Length: 243
Image (cartoon, rainbow, N blue to C red; front, side, top):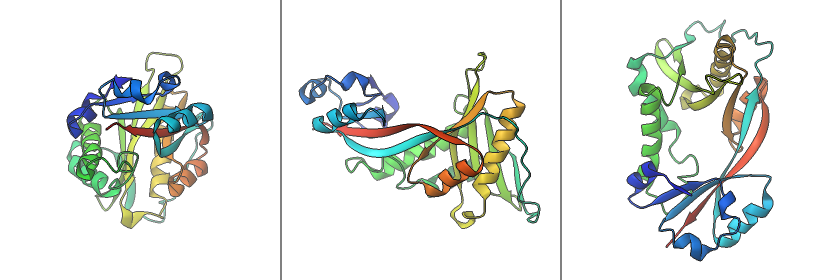
């Protein structure tokens, strides 16, 4: 297990993150002796034996995600915005930062595994998404590309991408943070951003593009499938609160 310093500093107690594999032969007493007050583990959903072992220790499931992957073959999308001239997809400008942070605050309140932990301060949970959005806009360690959807120059959605294995033969883009204004949901906004992201990924000569999606986020799962993504690598996020 490795300490998550950003989480420890935010919540005011020691937080660790792990893939869960090292916990296979651990006991609650051994974990408690580590000094951490919260363990966050992301585990392969196919490893039921490990998940059950962790449940016996006291871990609780907080979310389930799957990774969607697109191999970028034959990327040839046409926009569905042709009859809606006020809607466009464009590149991010630094002046969009406040709009993207505000959109994250409204979109991610009560979303994700942190919020599902009743022991965590909800305001601090929301700060995670605010900080993530701000860093996505201002720190190249978080994103290499941000695509923004606008309606008459008003930001209504966005999605970030980070290139991994830049100097390898097998390089790919992973989706980072994305959101769509609630008033514009159901209008294929996210699908259009996804398509533009695939075109960008292909133009960067990447091998594939991938995104992690919560399995209960039905609309985004549908958007991924409609854009030609294939699901794989399901994982479960589990928390252990240590008194």
